[in-house]
Image (cartoon, rainbow, N blue to C red; front, side, top):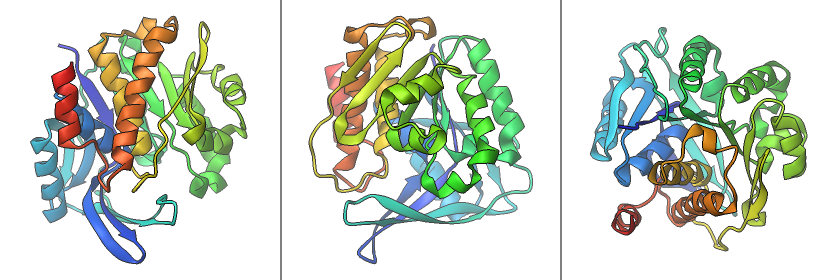
Length: 308
């Protein structure tokens, strides 16, 4: 059976608005995506690390209750689970403060063998972290060579722009090992100085032959060697945008899984199939923006399952 994997960091998010805590829940970009996919009943496996402490136990129970396999999580004892304090501004966009104490041995597990037509999601700062870089490169490279669909979301924000000279070669290497790059206009502006989807494509196509570029209310742009198109997004007033991009990724992956799209099809698909992929991404992201949750609601997941 086709499997879905996500590799990324795990944090426990505490969300503040107007100086007061509003919610506390497991987070991390790939975790958010994987939980949403677990809620719609897809076969998801999470590759990560968090401590064998009270917060880690909360996260572990939460993942299991949402159908996420944690066989490839490193539960370390010589540290603490990472905390993320998220402060929402007037537009409900978040800025973060982190507290972390990782194990001296990072991601100290046997990694899975990802097979052809499996789906792997990776990205964010975790994908360019020195301490796990060799293991990450080995996992992603093998998955791509085996024929899996590998999706990379650089999620590269302005807070790390001062490190760009050091990190850009790693980002570019990641792009060269994947099937699809999905990023925001902010990501490509920070990484390549790109101001438009076509400028981003001019940079990305040197490394990866499939780009999905999200630009908030302006829409979603797809660029491949065979297709160029723009898709609309929904007009809404968000409660929180914390999990929007993560759940756009989840929606795309759900559509890829449901429609049995294989790696070789990504570069040749036309508007009809891309519309199915992008519209589900938009649906997932829109749903998440209407609450403080980092993942789609169980009601939304059930409606989706009933409609499949």
